[in-house]
Image 1 (cartoon, rainbow, N blue to C red):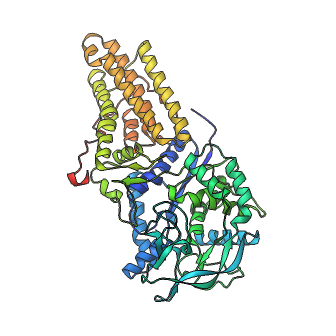
Image 2: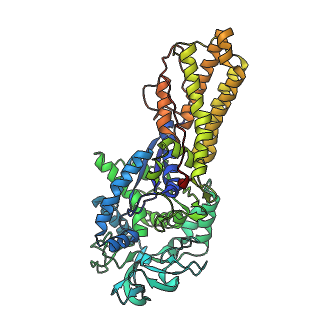
Image 3: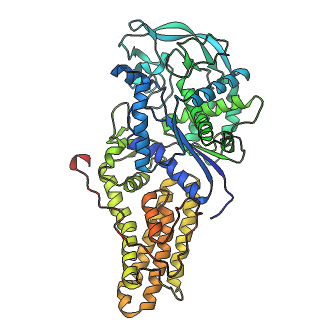
Length: 559
C-alpha cells in the first residue's frame, strides 16, 4: 500500500511529573500513539511525535508541598524516569521535553498575546476561593468537595474523576482546602478570561463538519459546545508556572500565572518548535502546523476530551483570527476510555495501578505491548489484570506467532541449509496463502490509519494463524522425507508469509519484529520500508532462530 508521503503530527498527552506511569496511562495514550506513529513511519510518512513532562500542574505543587521541596525538584526527579520508561517500552518520541523550557514559555506567551490582540482575552474581576488559614488563594486542584453532578465526595475543583465533568471550584458542594482542610472563602481577584462564547459558533460549525471521529469523543464535544460555552479564567493566582507576558495590560505580578490547562495544550506547539530549533532547522515545525495537508492526531484519555476537542481548537481559532499563517486544527482526537483494575479507574493520584516498569520484571517490552494493545480501551472501559495479560502473551503472541517463526526457521535450517529455498512452481494453496497475507496487510493498514488499533492487531494475528493452518495442511515435516521439492515450496511460502507477519506486527512489537526482519536477511530497519510485504529471494541466508517470547509467569499476588 503506497501513497504520497504525508506530514503526520502525533501529539501525546503530557504526564504530570509527579510519579511513574501505570498500565492505564500506557494503554490510554502512549502505546496507541506509538503504534500509530510507527505505522506511518514504516509507510514512509514524515512523523513528528511530541510530548513532555507537565511541570506546572497542581499535582506537582501538591507533591512538592508534601515533601517540603520545590516543584522543580519534583520534575527533575521524575522526568528522567519518564525517559527511561519510554526507552524500555519502545515509545518512540521524536521530542519529549518539559514545560519548564525557555521555548515553552516563549511560545505560550506568544499564544497569550495573539489571543489578546485578536480580542479573545479580557480582564475581569472575579471571586476565587481563598484559604484563610494558609492565607493564600487556592488553585483549582487545591479545592476538593462533592461533585454536584454525581455526588462523588472527592471531586477536584477543575474536574470530577468519577463522572469526568469539568468543574469550577465554586461548583463543589462542601468545598475544603487541600492545604489546611479549612472551608475556603471567596475573595475578589483580577484575571484574564478566554472569551469562549465568542468562538462558540465557529467551533460548533467545525465540529459538525468532522468525520471519522470516535462517537464518544465527537458526541461529547458537540453536546458540550452546543449547550453553550462559558468564558473561563485564563490565569490563576499562582507562583509556579508560565508568567503573564509583560506587555499584557494587567499587572503581571509574581503571584499570577497562565492557567495550566491552557498552557499545557500549547506544549504540543512549543515542543514542535523546540524540536526544530534543536535540530538546527528552526522553521521545520511549520511542516506539521502550517501545511494545510498535514494531519494532526491527539492521543489522550477520555478525561482530557474537553481540553483537546473543545478548548485547544478554540484557542487555535482565536489565534488564527489574526494576521499570518494559520495553525492546523486537530485532524482527530482518538481519546480512549479508562483502563480499570478490579473495577477501579487506574489513577496515579489515587495510587491505583502498578508502575509500568514493575511489569517489565516479568514481561519483555514486546510482550507487554502486545497484551495491552489487545486490550486497548478504545470504545469502552477495559478491566485488566495480570492473568489476562499472561493469557494474551502465552496463548496468542507466543503460541501463534513466536512458535511459527521458530519452527519454520528451524525446519529451513534442517532441510534447506539455512537459506530461503527455491520454491519452484506454486500451487493454489501457496498462492492463496500469500494473497491472504497481502490482503490482511492492506486491511490492517486501513484500520491503523483510522486508529482502530485493536482490530488492526487482530489482522496481524490472523496472518500468523493462517500461516499455521497452511503448515498444518502441508505437513512439511512429513514431505521432507518423501518430496523435497514440495517441502522447499512450502517452506518458501511460509517464509514469505512470515515476512508479511513481521511487518504486520512491527507497530505493536517493534523489537521482535526487527529481530525477525534480520533473521530473514533484512539489513536495514523497517522505517521507510513501505507497507508492503518484502519478497525474500531464493538463496537468502537466514539467521539462527531463538525463542522470541519467553513464557510469562506472574507471582500469584500479581495475577
